[in-house]
Image 1 (cartoon, rainbow, N blue to C red):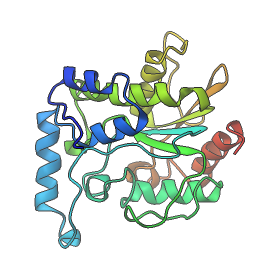
Image 2 (cartoon, rainbow, N blue to C red):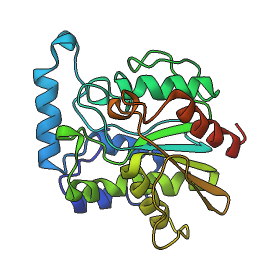
Image 3 (spheres, rainbow, N blue to C red):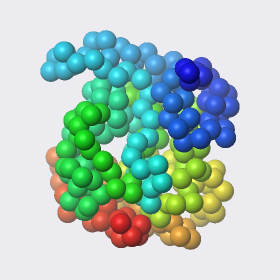
Image 4 (cartoon, one colour):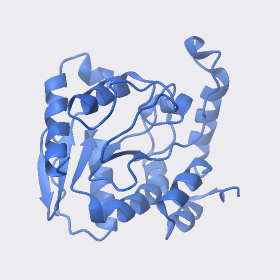
Length: 244
C-alpha cells in the first residue's frame, strides 16, 4: 500500500501523530510539505554530481535507520545533497559519514567502518540515527519554517523510542536544539533555559543522558576542531551509558 503523502505542515502533524515507527519511516519518504526542499532535493537528483553520473539518486526525504529498539539515538542536521540524498541513508556516502561510521566501528557500535550504499552490509548495534530535517537543504541550511514543519517526524520517533533510550548524541547545535525540543514534546522534563551546546557536554535527564558532539563536517574535521579521539570519546561514553 502506498504511504499517504504530507503536503503541508498540518499534514505532517496528522500523519506523524500515533504512527508506528514503521509507519513514520514510510510516511517520511513520501513527504512533500516543504516546496523549497522538494525542489532542491529533486534538482540535485536530476543533475547529479559528475562523479556519480551513473548512479540513480534517492532524491527523497530520509527516514531514520538502525536499531528499532535502540539504547542510543544519534541526531544530525539533515542529509547531504550528494550523500544521503543520493544513497537513501543519512550519513551514507559522504565525508561526515566516513568519520561517523569509522568511529562507531571503533567503539563497537557498528559492524564495519565504512558506509557507501544501502546494501553495503552495515549494521548498527543498539543505535539509531536520525536527521532533524529529513530532506537535503540548499547550502545545508534549512529555514526555521522547514525545521518546524519537519519536527513532528522526529518528535514521534523520539516518543516511540524514549522508553529504551539511555543516551542521545547530538551532532552540532542544530541537533542539540532538535533533540531537546523532541524530548520535551515526548513529555520528558527538560531544563529551562535549555543547556548550552558544547562538545562533550552531558545533561542527565533521569535514566537518559543527552551528549553534545561537534558535527563531523569537513569544516570541523579538516580544521582539527573535531579529532578522531574526541569523536570516539563521546560515542564511547554513549555506549557506556547504554551498557553496549
